[in-house]
Each structure stands twice: as C-alpha cells, then as structure tokens.
Length: 71
Image (cartoon, rainbow, N blue to C red; front, side, top):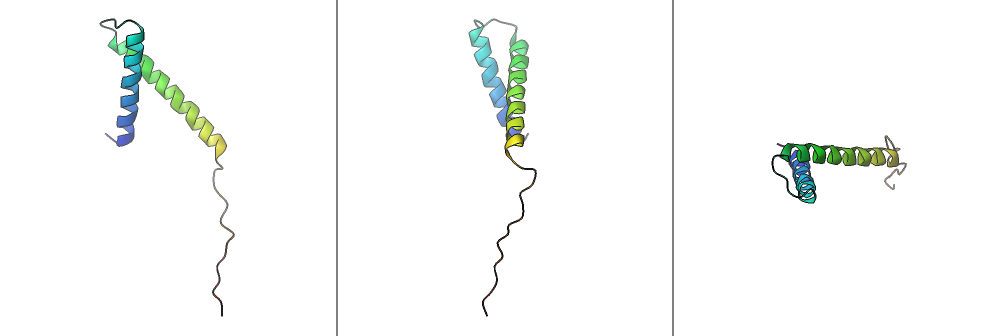
C-alpha cells in the first residue's frame, strides 16, 4: 500500500473513531462509522482538489529569462 493510501486510511480510522465516540461508543456499528468517515474524508479531498484546480493554471508559461554568454 502506498504512503498516500496509508495516510488516507489513517484519517478515515481517526474520523470513524471520533464519530463512534460522539455516538456514545455503540457496539456492532463499526462499519457504519467507517463508511460515514470514508464519505466525509472523500468529500473533504474532493473540495480540496477543486480549490487547488481553481488556484493553479493548467500549465505555467515558459520562462522568458534567457542567459547569454558575454564575448
């Protein structure tokens, strides 16, 4: 598993744990909290991706700096 996937899974795990604690630590609902956390994390990532896409140009213009040797 890549480092990025491991980080996403860790965020999901931590978020699911917070949801579980907030709900009073009910037994037998771990999958529900996991799916809820996964949806929340994916939604945050999508919003971040959209924000980043809007803030950067598709490609940067080439540098206009030309260096020339002196004769």
